[in-house]
Image (cartoon, rainbow, N blue to C red; front, side, top):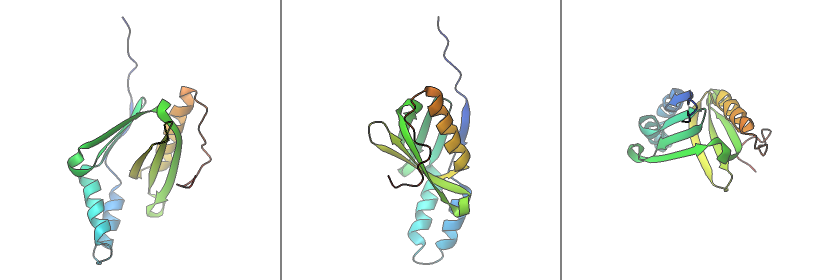
Length: 136
């Protein structure tokens, strides 16, 4: 009889509220209207769940798109601050070359550090934590 390790939740919730507020303010102009609609869709249906074993993202129309990634599948983490550094966008580059984008992640610096620590704990050693931004 084997026991499975307990999965501890680091973050579970939606995108940053500041993203919605800022984009709704921009939505008062005609140019900012598409950004406001995007922020409302994210606020309604985007959910992150970051645990000690995996990262799960539910999004898309009505929250029907779901992605799960284990830490041993992540090769690199790239972050870009948004909202004066209050939240940020993250891209997880996977070992097969595909990417998982996470928009408007609250406390993204803490989240990045947590993900990098989990990757290092797996012992892959292939991460490049000094990479910044979306450029390769």
